[in-house]
Image 1 (cartoon, one colour):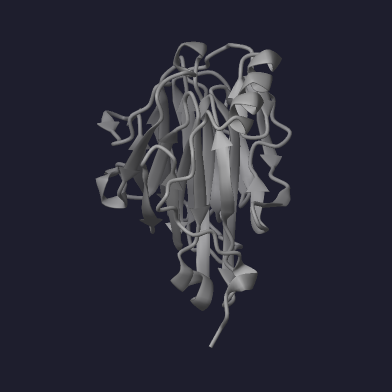
Image 2: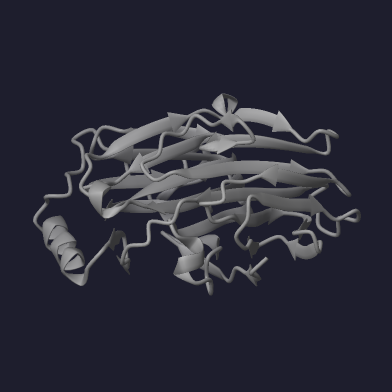
Length: 303
């Protein structure tokens, strides 16, 4: 195992709290992933839920996985919908797209629990100019499997895990799964040797590797090379979560230059400048005529 790092906390969009899961980790250890935020977990009071305004992307895919709460999405390519409680939206920005993500108005008014993940998956040079696309993945569509002793439940969202394939369609070969591990249980999974291997602790107290290295909420485990990943849950859970919840990620490294600037992930600085110029000229898409309204939380009047 290479490292266990702690995600610093910050604010995103209009001010919703996030943990920057990949902070301090070398891009070579993350490849083909470039960025991930854990959104929440937060229990909003009425009027507090926040989102993002319309903004552009180019050169990668955004994956939003909702664990608790509800988020609405709309993009300039006609994609969009509502995701909640285990749903995933998979948006390929490719050559360019505009989109917005926000809690529905009812949630802004009522408040409530909000917890999710947004992951950025890089695209190789050959796919950076692919047409935008949108995948709406319902939670019930994930492939479900359990460990032989029943100590863990795994939901495969994309890629293949121990012979089970998730519904997500990806340009870059990856695996994405959510594991719930009961206290004291350990899991040993076959893993593609040409993939990297990461585990992010969403909640609870976990262990990683044969050495049972501890990792807790908000920490990222980077496994070393190999064809097996091993993780578990501490027997005593010191957090509010009764189990350890982990997001498992792996992918075949692209091994190309990465220039990341704001909402763009390209191969060269010149391509970043081109993306900025195209956005300013309206060539990354236009806000639809029937656009989802962008309501700032401060505009909501409570009865």
